[in-house]
Length: 194
Image 1 (cartoon, rainbow, N blue to C red):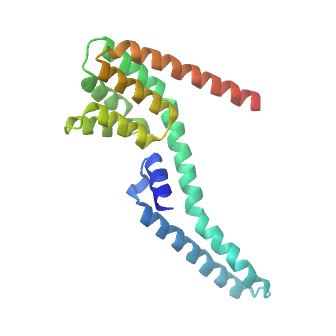
Image 2 (image 1 turned 90 degrees about the vertical axis):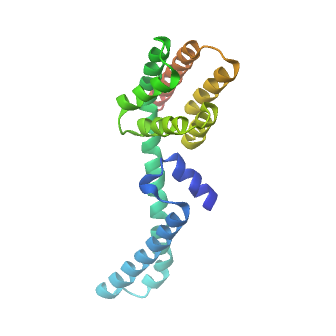
Image 3 (image 1 turned 180 degrees about the vertical axis):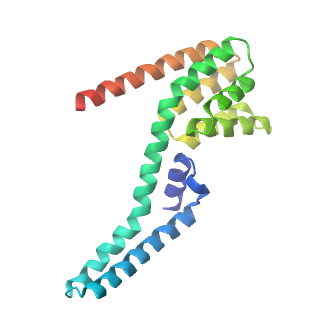
């Protein structure tokens, strides 16, 4: 459970800097708080004896509410990343093709994106590179941290280009085009479902 929660929290952008152990504690507190509120309500309203049997369900509800919040936060985080990723890719492509170094281009993109989820994630990657982490390691960490297929494809392509010593511009352009195609297909699929 701890490993699963750690991964989910990491993919959601570590909301509030909460750790897996703290999150489990939050779930337990949620269960206890829900049971306490239920017992208090049962006594205040003088409910019949069935309220005792319902206490277990109320505890499960209180225990599960933080998990629902985490899933919602993760979905919101991923939606925001998917929305800004094509823009970030276009900026990165233009900057690299204009002759800027990858790190400098990444710095400019982080400034443009601001404090949104994509800007924060790329900013963290930029800091890792500036602190001496090899670009390959920082990109791999970005892909692992985000846990999204689109970002994993992008980081894998950038790592491969770095290892082969090829120009990043064409690779970024191809990745940007593939990203747009995937987004278009996902939008079509949603439209068909509607």
